[in-house]
Image (tube, rainbow, N blue to C red; front, side, top):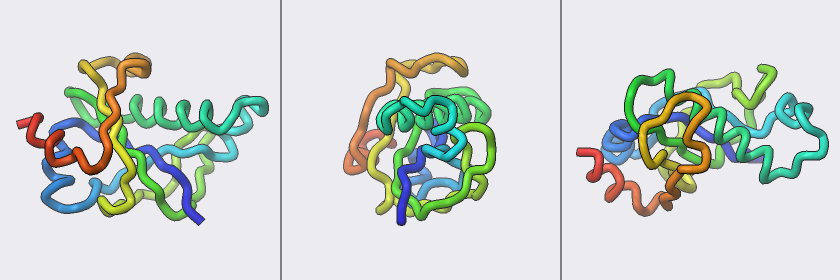
Length: 132
């Protein structure tokens, strides 16, 4: 069974994703049991958005620059933290990536959730060239 995971990146890392055909190994976020317990009335879409926002915040720890969240379908993995964080490092080939969410302008943790630009995985090469 697979789960939608959200992996934090910075925009310049996309060049390496194109070259290597995979995302850098990272801890990702997903809709975990702990996240579900935050609000039993939340629907799946709201929970997925929260997981994506947590991944966007995690990208700030990678350094300065525009943050990116890669959405990918991965084998189900445990998350024992009190939030959406997954325990395992994820090794995600490009074929499992669905899309990328890129912040319009560099923002701080807790900002930028409403300003994410959506890119289909087929647009990755074009997006990576724009970072050069």
